[in-house]
Amino acid sequence: MASDRKKYMREYLKNRRDDPEKRKQDEARRVKRIEEKKRWVDSHKELCGCEVCKQENRPHCLDFHHRKRKDKDVDISRMLSTGYAKPAILREMKKCMVVCKNCHAHIHWIERKKGND
Image (tube, rainbow, N blue to C red; front, side, top):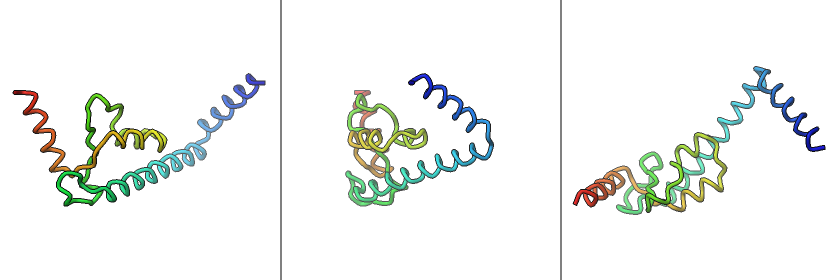
């Protein structure tokens, strides 16, 4: 029974790959899901604002900074573009602080300076 399902799914997916119209539909759905997740992440950034200077809350000016480098599994931007599920993205977001690009650059400058001392 399981092998029948496997065989069916293999054939189903092959037919989807071979049909240009279905490939186009699948790609449109994938792009729509990615855009929806980006809006979801942007709303989180906007809600939090910069945790350092408290002056910036425009999502395009904010980054996620991992509090501990060793805890970082994947860049959140990569998770969005490669289709990770929301729960996985949320787990990674919880390891981060939201900071504006200026504060983010300053944090990394301080980290590098500490590493050189």
